[in-house]
Image (cartoon, rainbow, N blue to C red):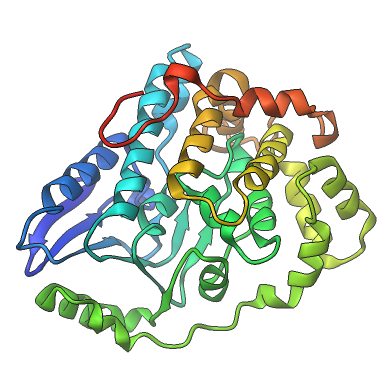
Length: 347
């Protein structure tokens, strides 16, 4: 089976991720093929909308397939990662900018690269199995694929919380935080998809139902206080001195994650403010990821979590208290001629 099934069906352009054994993890080739399909359908009068979904019961898309990026980075070839991220981010922007409705169905795990494919659609549907997360700090990256824009726009300080801890969002949380729009039990998906394909109109989504309540609402006031500013060391102190259960859970995640990634994530969200454009966020993310293999904890994070699976990464900094302002500035500084550009340009 191919990794992705792209076809025209009825009035819809269909994109189905077909790597269920790999939780539909996104490869570089899949990114390129999605971008090509969007370009072909943009002015195709036969395509009224685009429908994106994933095969298998467990995941829409669990993230990017980054083993080759690890292997090339270990060999000192950073160019492959630069190209992958640049083309992936352009594809993410193309989904958001598409002039026709894009409807994504986000069942099971939607994480990392899956957020980039599914969560910039114009209509994002979740169900009872949906679990959405940005766990990048745990592998030495930062929330990317435009995830930092979604996190920055989230109510209060929920974006800082979900972005640094990698905590999972159920369907209610995903809608509250801004990663999804609509709730529909998965049993109803086949009929709604069939109607979308047949009519090319989003009116079929009127079958959606009120979502489950977001349980994080009970904790939001405390989260807002704990993650009140962009200073990672101050946030760590608040977590350490609080006996609140949400603080203790976040503290464990803080201590597991790359200190440099956590500090850069908080600074990125602060810089973006509450109304960033997606392209502003992608450009800032690219500044970090362009440097990630050579100057951050990315290769060590992948080694510990995916390659050796010993879960004991040796980060460059022992704690966020050891990460300096200059360390963060160096990772997020403009890239000059290597800056990410859009509209078909090259970095």
